[in-house]
Structure formats: structure tokens, C-alpha cells
Image 1 (cartoon, rainbow over the protein chains, first blue to last red):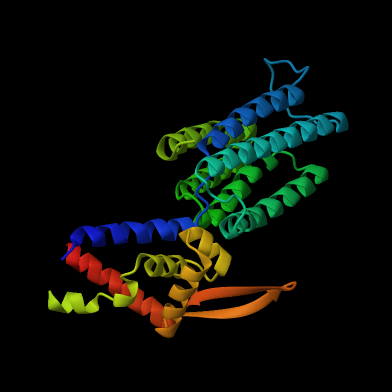
Image 2 (image 1 turned 60 degrees about the vertical axis):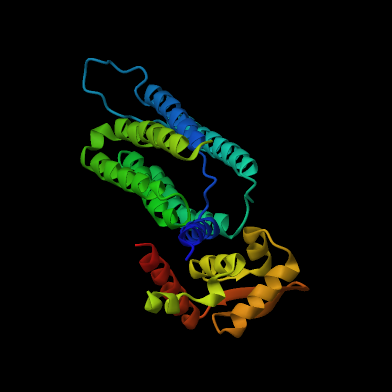
Length: 205
Length: 96
């Protein structure tokens, strides 16, 4: 009886199940970069919102149309740079591991990621133009978290817990609405960096 | 011991057939080319193993056309699922 063969068989089965159903080229470095970009974005948003206000008095977020425009520019630049970094590092990792970047798993991952994400994005834009500014930052966290949980079946398992952390932070942000931007910075900045480092150590670049 | 050995399925002794089953179990369906690149085998080799699994009644396929190219989608049958999980259980018992 050759036990070694069956140990190998079990390992092969597990490996094949993962490889055929999950997108495993996700790079931790893209998480770290996205985190740093989010912190930079939040800092410039902070300066835009609270510019020219007395720091010792109660501060109120007042948005003129001009400010709104600047914020939208900051947000879209941050988003685009993060996506670009994600694509760059992930492509590099897929190439190194000799894996195809565009296949059924990638498609499944993206479709399931984008359904909640686009819903949240559109909702936030509507709220923005209706003037409900305070809840937008935490709402982006909630929808991003839901998107991650939804997509986690098709990629590394850590993505699921990352999603749950983002949802919880988002709910906290809605409750403590005055801290929206700070909690947003923790969620998109610090948590991304932490998870990025964990995944970089665990799965390599 | 004999009981366990009886549950080990000869159809899954081969690495490629084992790979095909593992991949199909966790996916609704996979097409020929995806399977080919997952397993890193030649067309003929893959086709013959697919055929033998199909003969055993473990997998089924459907043919459709994308434009003019034929595209064959393979999926696992209920019988295949049962046989595969029996096989894995037998391996686990053997190793425990």
C-alpha cells in the first residue's frame, strides 16, 4: 500500500480545486499601495474641507460647488491610481507564477465584486448631489466591504474577513458620523496596508 | 481494510482524471481549453481521459458554438460527485 501516493493525491486535489476556482494572483503589494494612496487622498480631502477654518472652534464641513469639484477630482484620482497599481502588481505576480490573468476565475471575481461596488458608487453619487455628504464616507466602506465578501469565494480567503472588517468600520462611521473621514482613512488606508502586508508575507509578491 | 480498498475508485487513480474531477467539482462547468491549461496536457491526452470519465457516467458535456468555433463545456454529474466524495473519504480513512 503506497500511502505517500495518496497523500500526494489529496494535496493535488486541494491544489486543483483552488487553482481552478479562485483567482490567486492577487498581490499584497497592491493592497499596501492602495492603502498609502487612500491616506494621501484623505489628507488632501481633509485640507479641502476644513481649509480656512478656525481650528479651535467647532468645525463644520461646508462644501461649496468648487470644493465639491476638488473632492471629486481627489476621489477619482485616488481610485484610478489604486486600480492601476492593483492591475500592475497583479499582472506581475500572474506572470511570475505563469498563470493566466484573464480567465473564468478573474471574470467571476470581477462580476461579483462590481455588482455591490457599482450599486454603492451610484448611490453615493446620488447622495452627494442631494447634499447628504456626511454618510458618504462610511457608506463607501460598507459597500466596498459587501463587494469584498461577495467576491471572496473566487479569490484568497483573507478577502472575506477584510470585507467584514470594512463593513463593521462603515457601520461605526455611520453611528459616529462626525468621524466619517477618520474612519474612512482607517478602513481604506490602514486596514489595506495591514492586509497587504499579511498577504505579501503569506503568498509572496 | 478491504472495505476501504473497495471504495477507492480505479477511475480516479490516474493523475489527470483526478485533476479533471477536482476542477469540475468546484466549478459549474469548464471548457476544454480551460481544462487543458489547468492540467497542462495535450489535446489528445485530455480528450481520452475525458472520454473515459464520460463513459463511466461521471461527467457530461454540452457542445455550443461561439461564433464559428465549437466550444465544449464539461460538468460533473450527480453520480460523479458521489463517486468522487466516496473516493476522497476512502483516501482519508486509509491515511488516518
